[in-house]
Image 1 (cartoon, rainbow, N blue to C red):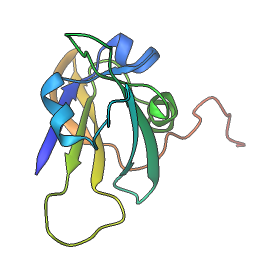
Image 2: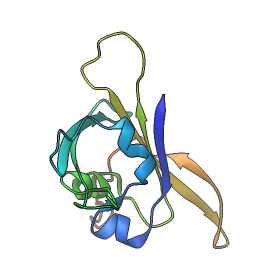
Image 3: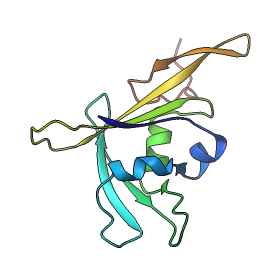
Length: 131
């Protein structure tokens, strides 16, 4: 099972996810193009479509753009949270070969002590509940 695991930076949550080049071999073939769409299913069963694009030339520097910011907003991701993409490598035919998981940093007194899975969409906390 190939995987991408990354601690998110401010750029990752505000613009695009920078993907390590070593994960490119786990993505669908670009077939000479500079971008490829792929789908990943989250822990709740929601299917997300992401676009991975690379630079033309010697250093591809892959990034996820399309679909990424919607995923970030849905999960309420912040800098310091973790993201993992898994590629299934079993022989069974599956509808979605990729899984995506997000984990929130657990902070106590400003120190990150670990990460907990984010399983539900972010609920708008700006709403005032009636008393």
